[in-house]
Image 1 (cartoon, rainbow, N blue to C red):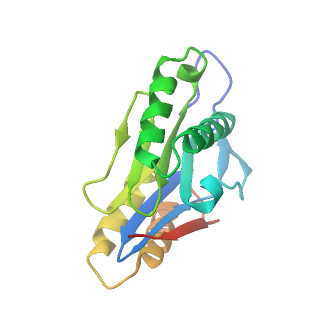
Image 2 (cartoon, rainbow, N blue to C red):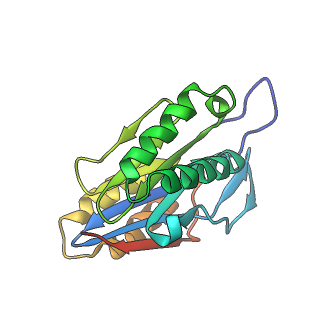
Length: 186
């Protein structure tokens, strides 16, 4: 999200990385929030636990929009307990068709013990081909680094930590203030 000629500078996205490896899934996110060319906060928490701790998620995009989506996802998870994929499909249906939700600018990565998913406002509910997925302005850097590290001996958390450091060293909208959440996977 860049500065628009029609309005004020937009909050920039972030970097969120998810790695599923050897019975563990980890989502990491940086803490930087930028407004135009200014860093306004360095320790924002963009990764959290949902569904009483059985689901982890991270967001990139407008903070208020992401919190709205997390709240909606919590509701869907209550409606469809233990069915992350179904809850996410129902959320993205609403996100795509509801006049209010359609304007929300965010992407989410969510995971439970069995599945990892990317959610977007265009109706995407995507499961990665490999155990790695990333979103946000530094997402491609983190994704490339994590894919390179995935084949080695590092565990999921170590991959997330190293890949996020690489992304923070490259992307000006990503910092080294890392928040991690993890689950033991199936």
